[in-house]
Image: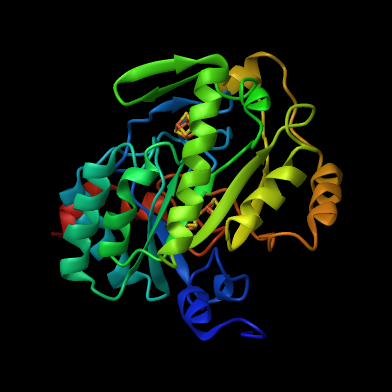
Length: 297
Ligand code: CLF
Ligand code: SF4
């Protein structure tokens, strides 16, 4: 329920299945995988998952143009009445591939003016696009933040690509960290709701996520979503190949309990794919592949 929440915040979350635990029983989201390019390398990436881009098995997302994406969104909206949110969350980075992201929103808003838009990004390019996000009435931005200490960042990010240059080591993590913090402050100043996703990597950043939680709360983040690293050598991620393990369910719960009292926690995340369609935990993406949509229009 609304509780102590201000009216303008409640209005933004009440039909968003990720930002409101209650809403996820009644509202559906979909993603379109229009953003294949990324400007950083995470040691857990396999480019199949959104938001945190977790490393689980799955079919590679369909790559599509903004035009195809808009057709798909209309097709889904016609068959899934609960659809309230369109997210762009990969398979690369929505704000590095910003042209495709914003062109998709332009195409969709002409046809479905009531649909809410949502993006997920690593934050590196985000400070350059805050005004554009506000212009498209985007009220929900997820930033994946795994550290606020660049030394820890060196264990997670081998390189970044920024302003036409590649950075490695501590330089890379310092720039990423500064840009992420700058993003949180700029989004808060525009009243855009921010969710931070953090991937819990045992022995790397697990206890450090307490500091991350405090830092993001201080910069106005609305929600913190701690997601377990799911590591498997079969998926070819760096962490998979080096034998990095993910946390057990008990370790995740233990950390979430320690975080209670800090930034609000999201506990109903289902670690969706970059092309997920439907209620959280449901995946209708195979019912809406481009060949099926082309056959209909
Ligand atoms: Fe998608 Fe992410 Fe928007 Fe939700 S998913 S871009 S905020 S509409 Fe949601 Fe999926 Fe968890 Fe993401 S359950 S992985 S938190
Ligand atoms: Fe992969 Fe996302 Fe990291 Fe880019 S930001 S490397 S797409 S997990």
